[in-house]
Image (cartoon, rainbow, N blue to C red; front, side):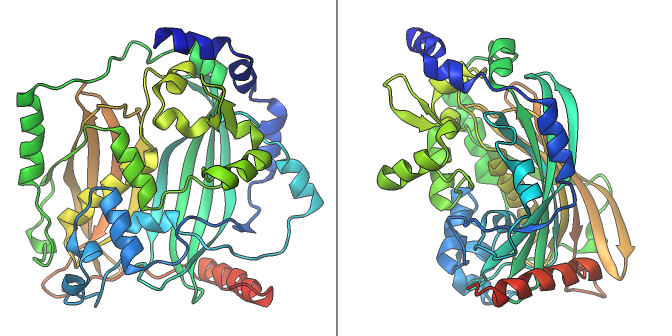
Length: 428
C-alpha cells in the first residue's frame, strides 16, 4: 500500500490535481457574488418525494423511525401519512427555471476556486413545513459570506456560507439551508499531514458488544408525547451510537439518494459525459483510470495522497444522524424548528460516534413551547467531532400540537416570485 501511495504522489496526474492554489482574485470575485440570488437549475437524484424515496433516505442513514418508513403507522399520526426526515429537504431538488445570470456574474464565476478541495463543515437550518410524498422541491440560492481563515488541517482556507431556500411546487417555503463549506488547497493539506499519525480503529469482541448494547437500548419516542411541562433544564436526551463507519455506510447513503451534486458522480456513458463537463474533478488512480476526486470517501490511497490517513464520511451524513437523534427524542408531535451544526473533526473509516445531548433551556415564545438543546458527537479517541444546537417545539397540556413557525413576509414573497417566474418560463 505504501508503494502505491508513493506512486500516486509521484504521478503527473497527482501533481496537476494538487497544484491549484487559493488566489486573492478568487476571494475578491467570491465576495462580489454575495447577495445575488439565482434559481438552482441542477437536479438532485431525488426531485419529487415519495413514500419509497423517503423510506430509503431514512434507511440510508440508519433511521427506522416508523413516521418516515411505515405508511400504515404514519397515517394514524397528526401528519396523516409519512413525512420526510427534515435533513432530506437539503438533498431533494428539481430544476428551477429563472432568468440567466448577467455577463458580469458569469465572469465572476468562471473557474472560481478551480481545483480547490471543498469540505462540508456545518450548516444552519430553519424548517417551516414538512416534505410529504408528492412534493417536488425547488431551490434558489445565493452567497451569504466569504471569510479567510487559517486552518490547522491545510493552512490558509476559505469559509463560504451559501443559503439555499427550499420551496415546494405550491410556492411555499419549506426550509432555509445555510451551508458552511471550507475550501483548502490539496497540496497544502497533503504537505501539512496534520492527521497522518491517526491509526485505523480496531475493536475487540467486548468493545463491539458495548456498541451493540447502546444500539439495543435506543428508544424512539414515537406516538408517546414528550410534554413540555415534563422537560427540565439539564435533562439528558439519551445516548445513541453511530458506526463504526464502513465503506458500506457510504454506499448506503449514496443508494438512498445522496448525489453529491453538482459533480454527480455516475458510471459508463454518463461518466464519459461528466469527464468532458468537469475534467478537473477526475484524477487518475494507480491503475491509470480517471476517477472522481470525491473518492477520498472510500479510497484510502487517494485520501492519503491528499493529506488524510484514510477515507472518511460526509458531513451531510452526520447531519442526518443528528436529525435521527433529535427526532427520536422529540416524538411524532414535536417539531424541530431550527438546527445549527458544526462538523469539527473527520470521521474516519472504523470510527464510532457516541451521540449525547442535554436540555439547555425552555421558553414560551409567540405561543409556542420551545426547548433549546445541545448535542455532541464524540469518537473512540474521545474527540468531539460534531457540536450542535437545536430548538424544538414540544406539545404542552394547553397546546398539544405545536406548530411550525410562520415564514417571514420577505422570504415568502421572494419564493413566490421565483416560482412564478419558473412557471412563466415553462417549468415543470
